[in-house]
Length: 222
Image (cartoon, rainbow, N blue to C red; front, side):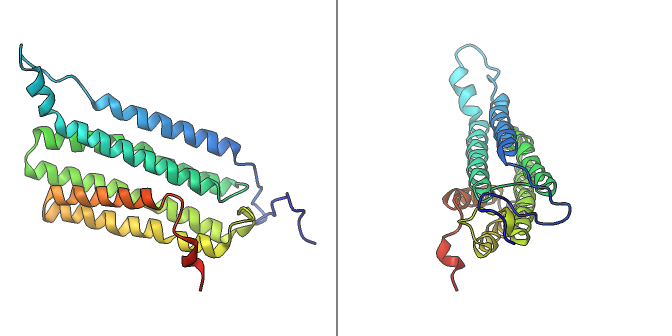
């Protein structure tokens, strides 16, 4: 017998399904806190009388790092919002995977602070290390998203009725792209130029912004 239209089929013997309301509310709270914490690294610079403007201009790297990470966290939230719209229920395993996604988000303020410090007070070697660290954090963040899509592909009963397993399978290309290209941006920043590496990170953030609603559905058609 098939399940009633509004019921979620059990994906496995240990797959007790729960509504997504608490997952959504908790995740939104985490993203809100993380995006707010970024501003803590913005401080009034030390300055002598009449030199406030030059002091503020000297903190330009901190402002840039803040803007990049603010947009990055915003893009992650948009992607996460779109991700949760694909499902109509969650299991314990999927909730743990979601925690891993959130873990990747909450560490962003640290590499942001390192990046700002390196470009404000450090030399080229410091900047190389900072860009590599930021890119590494971004690359590792892609891993739980890949696991999330993989879990949904293996448990289609959790999907919204309008979402097909083929569509979910195609979306795995996005975190795979993140793992590869963020990693390459880190290598570019370390071995070639920290500025070029940072540009690579920004381009990848733009890519995830453009595809925040997922890759086009025509890619799932064969």
